[in-house]
Amino acid sequence: MPTNKRARSGRPSQRRGQSPRYVEPVLDPTWSSAYGPSPEERLDNKEALRRTLLKQSRGVMATGLLIGVAAVPLLTAAAHFSVVISITAALLIIGGSLLFVNQRLRAIEGRLSTVASNFVASFLPGGAVRERQRLTTIVARLSATFGLSDVSSFVVDDAMYNGALVPNGNGFSLFVTSGVMSDFDLLELEGVVAHLMARERLGQLERVTASALLGSDGLRAAELAGVGSTYRADEVAAAAIRHPMGLASALSKCSLQTMVPGSFFAGEKYRESRWVWFNVHADRSEIEWGDLDDVSLRSRALAEW
Figure 1 (cartoon, helix red, strand yellow):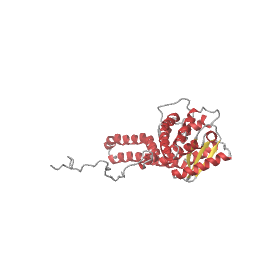
Figure 2 (figure 1 turned 45 degrees about the vertical axis):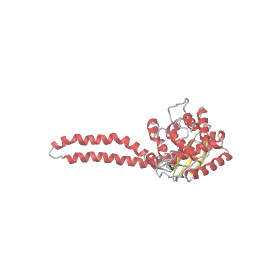
Figure 3 (figure 1 turned 120 degrees about the vertical axis):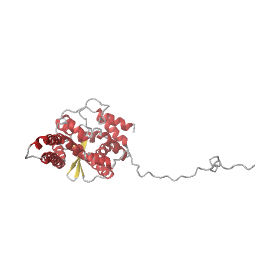
Figure 4 (figure 1 turned 45 degrees about the horizontal axis):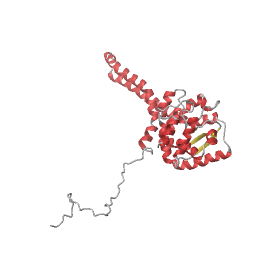
């Protein structure tokens, strides 16, 4: 009897040693890397300031609506008033609140550059010529990586480890302390700058800079800046540079540093602008493992990345 050369499934049996059939890979057009910002994430960050201002105005708008609703039975009882008048009054209050929000939004956006000016006035120039040249070289290279242009870099005289990137007109101003320039190696410095530029790629820069204009209201500033925003910027930065452990090491050094007396980061101006800085809790003396913005947690997360 002839042998059956087909398997029970009806498919030809594979000969011994024969390679499996080649299947051409198909790319998923909907796939996106978790380490790159999506358009939705950028838009969410860009709209954070507007959402914050709208939230602050909800009380006024709710009051206007309540006035309109409560006034309906009272006004309709009078011969010379109508329901239309009461509803119109409520809509005018709500519309006026929205107009006020838009005006405040434009005013704050127009003041973002003042943060850079305030930093220039708050520090003395620092760093040796060689250090400033090293920073300029790194900024130029990473600007190409992150798609930034017109970045002016400053080394400021302060022994604490920190840095900031803020809008300045049509460009950006980057500030790095002399403590970073003297004690961080090349890869650690690259990590700090990459983190700050990753904020712009994420669309975070405007919201964190706007938080510095809210004054001493720490809770509102934290909400506007976005709790955990530094952790996310670390992820994007680490994925964009060749040596992400440089960033982890920079964060570890920040966690081990104690406050230097007389530093900018020991004063009120830092507390008002903390969310702009690389280490947003430079004045913290203990580790907060439940805080995604704590440098110790951020460093450990990258070490396990």
